[in-house]
Amino acid sequence: MKLNTIAFKAFVVEEKDGAYVREIKMRTVNDLPEGDVLIKVHYSALNYKDALSASGNKGVTRNYPHTPGVDAVGTVVASNSETFRPDDKVIVTSYDLGMNTDGGFGEYIRVPKDWVVKLPENLDMKEAMIIGTAGLTAGMSVLRLSQLTKPEDGKIVVSGATGGVGALSVSILSKLGYTVVAITGKESERDYLHKLGAKEILLRGEIENFDKKPLLRPLFAGGVDTVGGVILENIIKATQPMGVVTACGNVASPKLELTVFPFILRGVTLIGIDSQDYPMAYREQVWKKLSKDWKPETLGDTCTVITLKELDEKIDLMLAGKLKGRTVIDMGV
Image 1: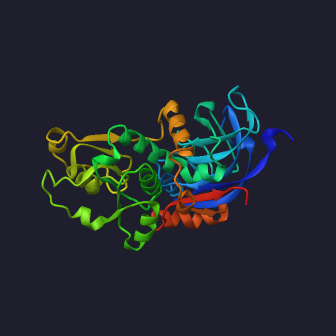
Image 2: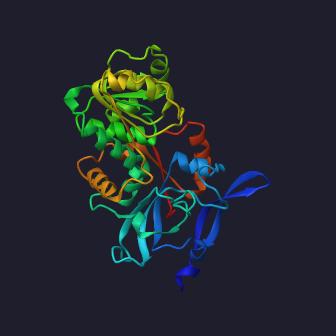
Image 3: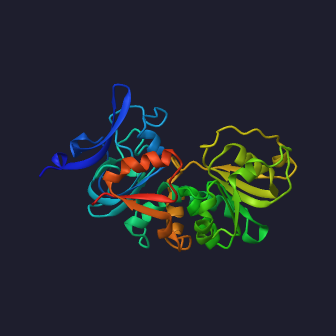
């Protein structure tokens, strides 16, 4: 059989009469974009960006029909690169995968060689997708934070702590010996967050209602913020002198209403994290750490495994803010 004639299932989003319809359809490899490496996908994972793409958000995906899925792990079927050979186990996350290039919600993807990372020896494929873009983003955040802040410096706060990036950040930081304060809007998830390693829980409403002063009483040595908006503002204002805060999300708001006082008077450092185009050398470094020293002991506890048929429902739940942890799609079921 010629490779281009291989038929496979894919979760396809189409625009019909002004609405966006999601269906599982049969496609062929010939339908995929050109690329150096053809990969059979074993697992994918659901991210917020996928949910936006599946809803017709033109800021994420310009053209439809389209198959989302910014995360994929699988085996190489064919390759034009000397780096990757058939049967190699590989990971593809971010870049343009699942945005304007058909992504991991299909049983096959074809991508440029520069997007591909070999699966580390200490990770299996399911674990790689529990980590996925969310874990890679968490790892990048921890890497930058840990270069400037040590466990003995004080508490580290993590916002959006029941989400994919937040939950994995809590787990990794806890494993590295940091005292973690988890911010959540879900009172019912206290036990879950404590199990991940959080020592304290701060409800979202509490930090949102902090004083409006330009500087607040120092509470944290640093933070990992995944939501932006007033929560990020108050984390920065409550960070102690020479503390470090990383920011990787803006679901609450992309705007910050701050003075320069935290940065000038306290020397607080704010570091932006963009996992989409993060340099490959750093990606490989973070993946290696995530497969060894940083691999959370509670990794499986942050995950729900579903089939492609269950994906539509999970997308709606994610958009409604009703999912916790990671949702992994088993493409072989």
